[in-house]
Picture 1 (cartoon, rainbow, N blue to C red):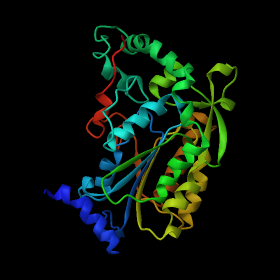
Picture 2 (tube, rainbow, N blue to C red):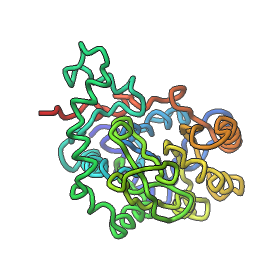
Picture 3 (cartoon, rainbow, N blue to C red):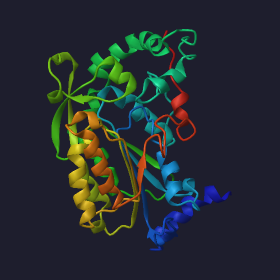
Length: 330
């Protein structure tokens, strides 16, 4: 039996015996006794950053093999049309079922990364590769946007609460992935969100109240979870666990509602983050650039701040090999 094969059983034995495993942090941080390793991916898209715990965890714990640890991975995604694929993906990553093919290119939020799939869609010679890909997959996007039968079963309170409650059950074995089919917010409430074909291809829905003249047929009622409260309840200091928690957030402007509440929890020592990866969307509010800079400074006072494109990529096929597994239109 190899060391990797032995580790889950040994870890479970350690926890049963009340033994904590010591890991070291860099950047002058003291060694900590950690009994939970948690990565929360808020804005999972097509699973583009579902494996980011390997990258960011290694940055914070450079002498530790991330795959030896019993990570809990929670994927929040607001887009209903992405839920069926993400559910099959998490089942596969948990060792149950085959690797699914993504229905659309998994290039992330920019046309540049979508163009990685030009050859996949016979668009290598096209002058505008993104437009060529868009036209090839448009029938699939129309089906995803308008056929609610494929995802309606995920948009229920029972399923949502069941998935959220998984955070009350620490894993003691291999990495465990959980899809939470919901938006992230600062309150528990229903949101009216909209996606167009290009926003679906690139990723990112928008709250209807920020737009005018949106057709009712393109509006989706999605439940938002009070993210700061959920994080504190399950991973905060009051739980008694010593949790190594990494949070990634890419949620198209909703961060401006969530961050004040999250920062307040960190300032009052009610929750700690080992690292925070985010993309701040300044275009959604007035003086957004200045607000993003200030929020970044506030976060940096409490934890390590990772920035997209600087510290990690939203299209990393090494960390997320499933991103290359995409279906071809007929």
